[in-house]
Image 1: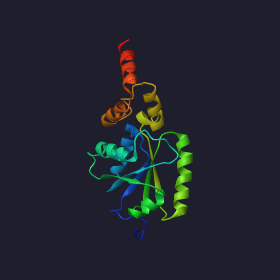
Image 2: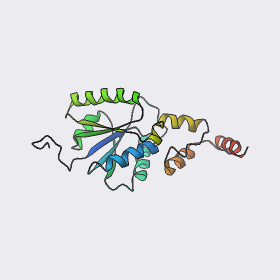
Image 3: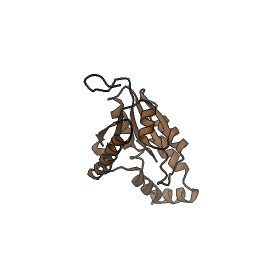
Image 4: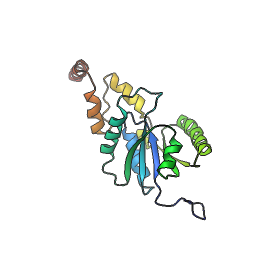
Length: 181
C-alpha cells in the first residue's frame, strides 16, 4: 500500500528475479546488498523456456536456499509466467535487478518500463554489480566450466560441488591431468 507521500509500505517484500543457472558470487553479492535495503527479499527463480538449464528448477531453488541460508530476511521461491503476476501475488511493489555492464542496462530498462505498463505498476531498482563481479555471468561460468576451467572464484562452494557432480568421469580425469602438468 502506498502512503500519502507515495512511499511503499515497509513490510512489503522486494523481488529479485532470475534463472540463476548457476547462481554466481555476483548474484549472491546483489542478494546480500539488496537484503540490507528491504525488510524481505524474495529471490524468484524462473524457468526460462528460452534457455537450456544446467540444473532443474527445483535444484536451482535448493542451491539458492543453501547459498542464502545465512541471510535472515531472504526467501527463495520459484515462478512461471509473467514476473509482474508473481510480484503482485507476493504483495511486492519493487523488482531488484543487478547490472553488470552498460549493455545490461538497455535490456533491463526496457523490461522495467514494460513491467510498469503491464500490471501492478511495480518499480524496478537497479543495483550495479560490485567491481569484482562485473564480468561474471552464469553463461560465462558455464562456458568456462564446460571447457575445464577453474570457476571456484565465480560461484559459491556448494554450487561448485553441484556443478562438479555433473561432470562425466573422463572430463574430471582430464582436468586433473591438466592441473598436474
